[in-house]
Image 1 (cartoon, rainbow over the protein chains, first blue to last red):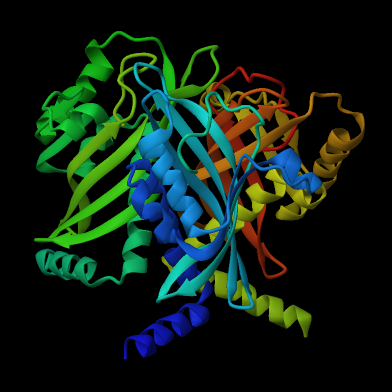
Image 2 (tube, rainbow over the protein chains, first blue to last red):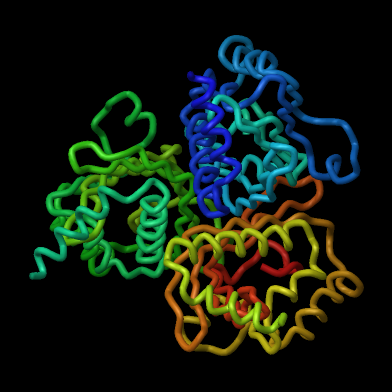
Length: 172
Length: 172
Length: 172
């Protein structure tokens, strides 16, 4: 029974008109940013399918087709590992990161996969310091419907600067 | 007659579907930002109910439940006072502030009150200086329908940095 | 036949409800930003009618009604000239510019012309430098329907700071 219900929901995503789909995506991207901004990192892998591709890559490398990436995760387990590193092993100064997402483009479905691009800027605040731009770039995402929800099959963060004021400790 | 019309509009907000409500809120937040960006401060209290709660509070204090706030207004009269201060008594260097709001989350109605969260960043430009980040954080708002319009019963601006490059002269 | 189809599309823009029109505009502004962010400058004039008005002007001048503008283009040919300058004649350090647009206000149709305002911030990244705020301000646009599409009859970028960290090489 549950499966049938999911199938129905899945079908409904494909038949949504452009405006309704855009609104669903705005909602999803806002939830995604809030999850990270509020440091609910344990919930973060749930936005992805398994396997998946999560990549943070400088624009120069991306545009030249060079493989080197700053972060590369190819499964949910790898994302969970990242969260463990943030919680347990990584050493870093306390900070807040806030993500602003704009300019979403819904590029359409291909083989049950939805391509979505959007601009992001991550603002970082270290303790007793002013807020500054940490990283700006473009999400180049592919989403699929899984269990009645849109999930990231691929999330590629192509960022403009090779430099970041500190290391990228938290996900984008 | 007028009252009946308002009642009808009020009911219509509660029954709006998620997408339409989101669009109404995007519109409202854009009007709110424009009102402040264009320094039409006298119109600003009209976005609120009376009484209301307008608060600007550092994230550290907010998350620990500490009461100290940078700004605290508990009625429309207090908001009007703030505007008077900006216009008449406060001494400050000329500046422009621009507010960018993204990542709106419509968290739903509880007892005729609508909870909405969104990210904001305020950019400040002093005369003959470059534009910089003044303050970034999260609006944690509660809205009610009054006179056929959505108004802020509560607007709490939780900001990431304890430091601001100058004092907060204008509202967020 | 083609003309009739276009006429039909044109009529349909005028009769769109507020929410649908807003969604169309969000899409258009996202396409516009992506065109420039991805440096597809040759496509940029196609967002405009001919003649058109494209202007970048400091807020101080705009508010006092002073005519001086940083950029002023009054036809598509002039926009094409700008692109030629970027590609062929201008000398400048390599850079990426990313445009974030928020707070769109759809102010309505007057004489088949649609007035739209929105906030923008342009983030600039020079090679081996951190990303920083290049320019923030307000789009004050007028759009018309041409060939079944919304196009800019006027795009006036009113920016907050007289200073920019470098010259404005790329359009906003």
